[in-house]
Image (cartoon, rainbow, N blue to C red):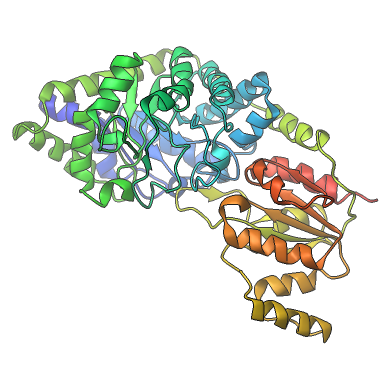
Length: 503
């Protein structure tokens, strides 16, 4: 195998399907593949993940194994993670950097115990746009100062556990109204604004020792008309030369439609490496590491990608792998950090005692293909703690027309069961304490309308904001409410216990 072949493989991070490593992946690892990324599809249990990572290291001991692990409702480790990480926004709202550091250390120890050594977190995006459809509670907050402080604490916590953190999504994914999984977002802030807001947390994270930074599939018009992932001006000029980052640059997943609407995954891999990325990420289960390696080799052969850029990328990845091999791993964790988060969320707000039989209407976002939930919805958690409770999860649009609303009034007056899902839920809640949960209602018209519809029919309601806490501004004065700033299962169970206590 030529040095070019090995370098080309070393500049790739790929995903795969199944809970055991396929033969072609093990061969690619043996031949120099830079890194492997795990997803929900690869995780069934703690023992299974450990066996999987052991098999990858048997193929080559210094292969880097990565996973997204940001905290909140969703995770790729749900079946193998007894103490899920709090959402970053919850940590930012509590604003205790020691608690953030401890939370990150526990989460990183969880990964280390499973044989994973690269945590693709934290998100240090400043969620300055409340209409942002993809960052939300993945961010520590809405200001550069708070995100910077907690981003640094998080990076420090991960490093203390002996694995590598990866701040993302450079130069910043917070001021968008488009999901880059679906289309190409654009940020038209001036360069001065980008420096003051988006870049500040990345500068702080670099100073704190971040090993890896992930690029965003976003056009920043002040710098380039190409998305950051494919922009030499941003990855090399801004991140490397201006900010002085010397570690590994990884792309976000190149199969996202922000990239693939205009080019193939293979061509995007070449373009990203040419721009300055050291790891081109192809996370789909059908990723073919051998074909991707050959595409990079061919690009060098036809002159579209300099061989020295590929060699430099692979060398940075190998240097990270060597550094990881020398670090002392902390693998002990007992959930103390997330339990403290949950206790403080409850202690710092007011939760009425509703008794053991409330009805909960969970108005929540649709499931995202990039994540997997720890639970099906709030009714599941209520039923676990208070078996006499009941409820419904509504994840799709259930907006009522004026005609449907009038029909509800007529049917309800006659004691009939309405056909509309929201109306059925309202009817089922009659005579019982009602909890309405909303997640990012501010950016979701149907949730706002559903909340208004329900509040018009009940004056004895408790509203729980499980997304960004700005949703509390939508709750009318006099209606009791609280926020969890995310849907971490441990935090929500503590809230359920508080709400279902006897009056």
